[in-house]
Amino acid sequence: MKKILSILLSAVICASCAACFAGCGGSDEKKPENKGEVNVYNWDDYVAEGQDGLMNVIEEFEKETGIKVNYTTYSTNEELYNKLKNSNDNYDVVVPSEYMVSKLIREKMLLELNYDNIPNYKYINKRFKSLPCDPDNKYTVISYWGVTAMVYDKTKVKNKPDSWDALWDKSLKGNILMIDNSRDAMAIAMQTLGIDPSKCTKADVDKATEKLKEQKPLIKKYVMDQVFNEMEGSQSAIAPYYAGDIAMMMEENEDLDYAFPKDGSNLFYDAFCIPTCAENKENAEAFINFMHKPEIAAENCKYLRYGCPNDEAVKLLPDDIKNSELTFPSEEYLDKCYIFSDVEDDVYTYMQDQFVKIQAK
Amino acid sequence: MKSRKLTIPYIIWMLVFTMIPIVMIGVTAFTDKNGAFTLSNFNNALFYTNVFTKSLFIAFISTLICLVAAYPLAYMMTRMKKSTQNTVIMLIMIPMWMNFLLRIYAWIILLQQNGPIDTALSLLGIHGTYIGNTGAVIAGMVYEYLPFMVLPIYTVMSKIDNGLIEAARDLGSNSTAVFRKVVFPLSVPGIISGITMVFVPSASTFLVSQYLGGTDDIMIGDVIDKVFWTDQNTGSAISLILMVFIFIFLVIMNLFGDEEAIA
Image 1 (tube, rainbow over the protein chains, first blue to last red):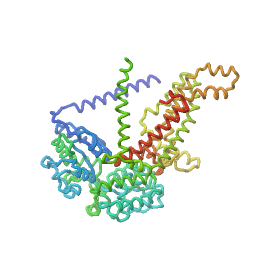
Image 2 (tube, chains in turn brown, red):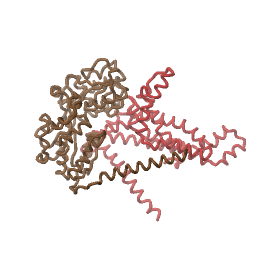
Image 3 (cartoon, rainbow over the protein chains, first blue to last red):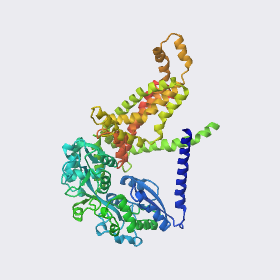
Image 4 (cartoon, rainbow over the protein chains, first blue to last red):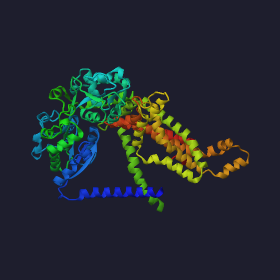
C-alpha cells in the first residue's frame, strides 16, 4: 500500500516538474530585442490570458513588439484612483470607467494621447468616439462598453420582468439580490422614481436612499462577484448585474434568463488612458493600439462578453456572441440608456456615504 | 550591548510597519480632506454605533463558543499519548494551510439551499435556511478561530507539572477538586491568550459576514472597508475607535491574568 502511494506521489512530483519546465521553456524560446517596458494597470479578469483556449493577448503583445508588460490589476475605480493619487508607482496605461475618466481629467491626471500612434482607432464605432466624459476626444480610447440588466431564475419568477420594479417585488422577499455598488444601486432606485441619474443632485440621492431603504427588508444580500454563485447555483430569484456577465451565468444554468428594463438602463464603458505619471508613453500607445487590433479585440470580447466597440472585431466574432442581445443590445435600446459620467465629486461621495449607511442601519 | 544591536532590525520593523501606520491613521482621523484639524469624522463615525455593538456582540459569542468547545478538547489532549497528541494537533492545523477565503466558500456550499446540510435535514423533515443570518456568521467565525483558542490552552495545560496533580490526589482531592483547584487555575494564562487571539481578530474581521451573513449582519470591518472607498478620514476615525476598544479590552484581560499571557 505504502509503496503504491509513494510511486503515485513521485509520479505526481515528476509530472508537475515537467509541466513547470515546459511552461518555463515555452516563454524563453525566443527573446525579442529589448524595447523597454509598459506598466499596465487594468481591471481583474479583463483580457484573455489563455483561458478557455483563448489567446494570451499579453504574451502576444510582448512577442510582437518586444515590449515587456508589467501587468497589475485592480477591482474598483476607487482603488485605481487612490493608487494614482497617493502612490509613487508609475503606470503607463490605466482603464478607468466613464465617471472616473471625468474625475481624472478634471484633476489633470491624464495625458493627451497621440492618436497617430493608435491607427486602429479608426475601427472604433462612431457612437464610442468623443465620449461624454471626454467630449473633445483627447484623452481616451474606449475599451469595452456594456449595460446593466436583470438576471432571473425562471423557476422562481413567473413573469418576465420588464422594469426595475421587479427588484421591489414583495412576493420575492428574501430571494432578491441587490448590486453592492453605490452608483449602480442608486441609479436603479432613481430610475424607478423617474429621476435621470446622469443629472442627479443630493436631493435626488436622498430620494433614492429612501427607495433603497424600502427595498432592504426584501433583499437577501448585497452582492458583487457573489452573484455568480448565487444565480448559477439557483440560490436566489433575481439580481441586477452587468449584461455581459449575465451571458456567462446563463451558460452555467439553463433556468436563468435575462430582462432589460424597458425604460433603458445604465450604459457604462471603460476607456484606455495614459496617466500623467506615465514614463513610457509611446509604449503605452502601442499597447492601446494592439488591444484594438481586430483579432485581439475579438478575442477579448469572447472572453469578457462585454460590448466590443471595435467594428472590425465584431465581424470576427462567432454568431452566438454577435447576435446576443446581452453583449450587443439594439441601437434603439442604447438610445434609451443614460450615461453616468459627470457626477460631481461631492454628489458621488454623498452617494457612497448614504449607501454605506443604508447597509449599516 | 550586543543584544541591543540585534534588536535594531525589529525596532525598525515595528517603527515602519506598526508605529508609522498608527500615527498616520491618527492624523487622518483628526483631519478633513484638506488637512485641517476637525472632529467631524468622529461625529460621522458615531452613525455606525449599532454596527459596532453588533460586531462586538458577534465577536463575544464566537469567543465564548470557541472557549467552551476548545477547553475540554485541550484538556483531553493533554491526557492522550504523546503520539496521539501530535496527530490531533496536526488535524487542528491542517485546515489552516488553506486560504481563509476558500474555507468560507466551503461553508457557503455546506450551508446553502439544497446543500449537504439542508438536504440531510430535509430528509429528517426539518426545513430551514441556514445561510444569510447571524448564526451562519458565528459558525464561520468559530470554525475560523477555534485553533487559536485550542493551541494556547493546550500549550499551557501540557506544561502543568504532573507532580502537582498527584500531590493533590495524595492529599485526598477527588478528580473534580483536582480540576477545580489545580488544573483550572494553572490554565488561566492559556485561556486569556486564547480569548485575546480569538476576540481581537473576530471583532475586526470582514468578508465573513459579507459571504455568510444577511443584509443585517454587516460588521464594523466591512463598514471600514466600504467607507474607505471615498472617505479615508471617517474610515480612519472608525478604525481608531476600534483600536481604542481593543486596547481597553486587552487592558481588562491584563487585570485577570499575569502579563506574560498576553502576546
